[in-house]
Length: 569
Image (tube, rainbow, N blue to C red; front, side):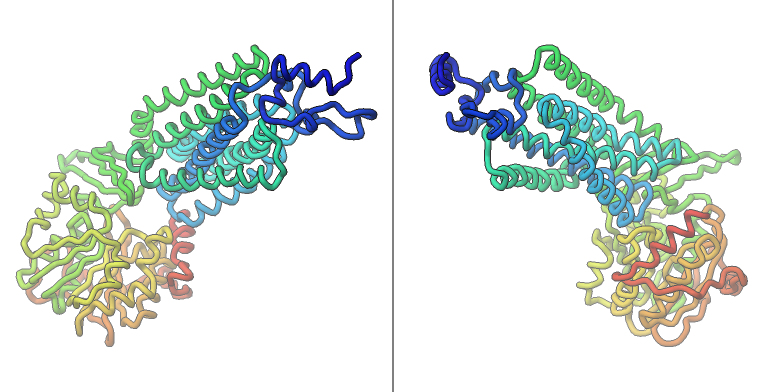
């Protein structure tokens, strides 16, 4: 009988073994002399079966490792896109981006640890296990946005569904790392530090690319649902095809055929869903709104939806929603905008600043005064301005206010714009969306009102739309108290707007308390007069919630108030 060393030499010269093909030395692969349990072979150390150990790779060890690390890079990019997609979807549908990010990231990181532990028994068959994990991840991650959108639109189970999906996706992502480490060691053994460094370097760089691709490429070009589906396809191809091709000789024919068939099924499901995604999104979006949708657009800043319904009287009701929140109804918007604008313009009004109000309806009311010399409107989303100018029904509603030579529009974040502003304005109208997340709550902070105060001319006035003192009394009085904290004297008031309910405003100016009145030369109004204004300053006993904290950038308490009150409204 030949000695083990002679047998190895003879076989190596005739046909390279798997060890020789992947670069293992003779010392590492030689069978131990004496007690076999005293010093395990390299095969046992990496968990190779006898069949796998005799199956060489066609590529050199360097090329094979590069291919696996490329798969690591791609899978990491896909995994981060899934995380960001879940965070962004929650911010769009529910608001409160900090809470949504906290839920998704904490659940997913915990699940990644669980997935890593769960993958330990699978390391004996890493090729098959990794292919199955990637197929499941591609399918679940690709369909995650669509499934959560459906849960929100039809089942009212968004948060429980979010937790389940985030956990499953995180567990599958966590299972990738130990399996990939085993595959890398199967190609060429390294010490643990070097192997971990190579693996994590590819993983972290892939995460960087995925993190940048989501907001700058996937979301603006493909949208939420299609973007996730496309990433699922990439995940399936990179995660399954590369590994199955590279290690195809190390699994049986039946298993190999089954895995290729499974990958093809995943691609068919994702591709078919991609084709039907637009129809699904239309149906799901319509389920969220009472009236037929006339227009829906997702911009880099928000989702814009217009609905239209014709009443029995023949009067159309056009409604604008931003991220699901109603901004106006064409039937009664004049009540809201007359109450917002005209009390503030009872003082000096030569130069007027409007912060928000991209629909142009507040601008329309401002420009009704002939002595207004300029009206500057600062709106973050240029698409909203475009619609207000070009969408016939909105343009007719705002009476083509943007075409007035006195009107000037600036596309910018109001907070940042005010920081760099040196001009002074006689009247400032703050017509911002409700502060239901941190991004909008900063526009209701002490710091923001301090910037507004700096932009006011002497004896200038500011008015702020402040939500509903009935449905959200703590939020309303928090805004009023925050304005006072910034150095204003305030005069809060509220009116009835049927589409909104009881709605409130805060009129403010530095120094003495501003008088709530109309100018002597006020234009003809449909709703507001002196009697309405006198009644508007009276709040019922059940609406006088003064036990609130102020809202600041560091402590955005208004988000907490808004979330708790409107959830129960």
